[in-house]
Image (cartoon, rainbow over all chains, first blue to last red; front, side):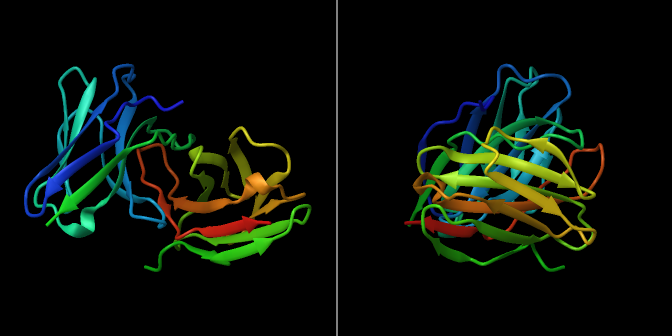
Length: 111
Length: 114
């Protein structure tokens, strides 16, 4: 079973920041938080991952709480092309191990 | 770099037949994982191959099998197809290592079993 809890859906206005929450209260010390997204009928796309510190890349920012029990993915200026299902995944950083996908959050960016 | 490629993109088979799907990973990637996506069960892990060896397996029946070749290309096979095998089959490749690494997914093969 997935180790994360996400809201099933969210709306965001185009041009505004989209903040997608994720709860992972049972996360272990060696587990990373990964975010992927899947645009309709395409393969999932890697967005970002983090362990303890906040992370930022060209796509998004990841904010992890100090106790690591929750995190937020931030898309700073959402566009219509960001409409997708966003998956928050917790897994170890080791070379073995698969991604366990939950149901994710369906983000709808509206004009 | 070219991305992960999967062939064929669409496939229609009949119950009882078998099917082979192919995945070419990103150049330099030695790990290939396979996932099944259905509306009811979502994305589920099938198996992972690394250096021609299966090193991780999901909870699927033995009808689902795979292999990896020396050039890291991978195939998965489903024998005795059932209607419930209709799904999007996704392949993902990644690099080796103990540091956290991301998986890059292909576009998938849409299998329809009639």
